Length: 358
Image 1 (tube, rainbow, N blue to C red):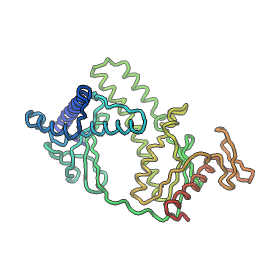
Image 2 (cartoon, helix red, strand yellow; image 1 turned 135 degrees about the vertical axis):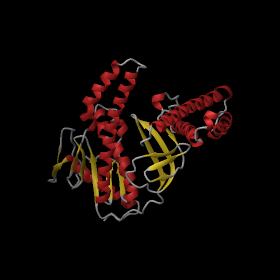
Image 3 (spheres, rainbow, N blue to C red; image 1 turned 30 degrees about the horizontal axis):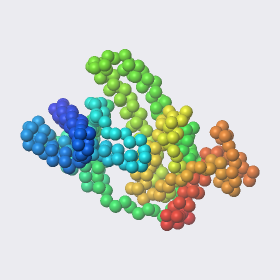
Image 4 (tube, rainbow, N blue to C red; image 1 turned 90 degrees about the vertical axis):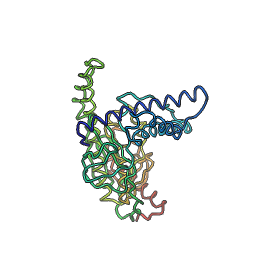
C-alpha cells in the first residue's frame, strides 16, 4: 500500500488501539477463568465493545470492523490453543502482544476502485494492483511489515475446477544439493537465498546488538534487520510461485515426497533445510494446482531412494552414494531414481482416487 502521511498515521493509531484491545480482552478472559472459572466468548466481548464504543468517542471514531478484528484474532488464538490441547500437541497459550508482535488489523468487506481501496472512515488509499482480484471480496487485512504497509484480500473464487485427465505426470525428489530432481532427469538448482544474504544480515545484526535499547538508532537498526529477512522471504515465495506455476502449466499430475520437514529442520542440516523452504513450495504448489485442476499427490518417502525404479529391488546406499547401481543393470543419479519411484506411487494414489493415470 502507499498511504500518505496522514493515512499512515491513522493506520499506526488503529494498530496500537487494536493491540491494546487484544491484550485487554486476553486479560479479561484469563481473569474470568481464574476467579470464577467462567469462559468468555467472542460474542460476549463484541457486546462489551459495543458498550465501550457508545461511551468513548475515541473508540467510536475507529471503524467497528477494525476493532472487532482484534477480538477475532484472539478468538482464533484460543481456538488454536484448544485444538492443540485436544490433539496432545504443545498447547502454547495465547500471550500478550508487544508493539513488535502485533502488525495487522482487518477492515472487513470493502470496495476496490481502480488501484485504490476504500478504507472505512478514512477514504481511498492507493495500492499496487498487480492483477485482478479473483472473486468476491470477503475480508481485507492491512499489515505493517518491515516498515512497509501491505493489503491482502480474501476472495471467494467459487468452486474449484474439476481435475484434469492425467496425460503428463512428473515425480519430484526434493533435496539440498539441487532444489528438486524430476523423474525425467531435469534438475532445478537450489537458489540458497538465505546463504546469499547471510553476510548482509549478520552485518546488520551486529549493528543492532550495539544499539542502546529504547533508542531511535536501535529502532532503525531493527527495521534494517527486518527488511533483510523480508527480502529473503520474498525471494523464496517468488521462486516457489514461479516453479509451481510452471509445474501446473506443464503437468497434469505432480507427485512429491511427504517429508517430515519439521523434524529435518531440527537436525544438523537445519539451516540448509529452512533455506530450501520446501514447505513454502508445497503450500504454493497445492494452492496453484487447486486453481488449475492439476493433481498434486504427496507420497510416503520411505524406501524411494533405495528401491530400484526398474526392477523394484532394494539397493542400500549411504548419503555419500550419489549414483544408483542395481544388479539389473540400471545406473542413474540416485535422486532421479527416487523421483521415478515417487511418480509411480503418485500414479497409484491418483488411480485409487478414481482417476485413470494412463
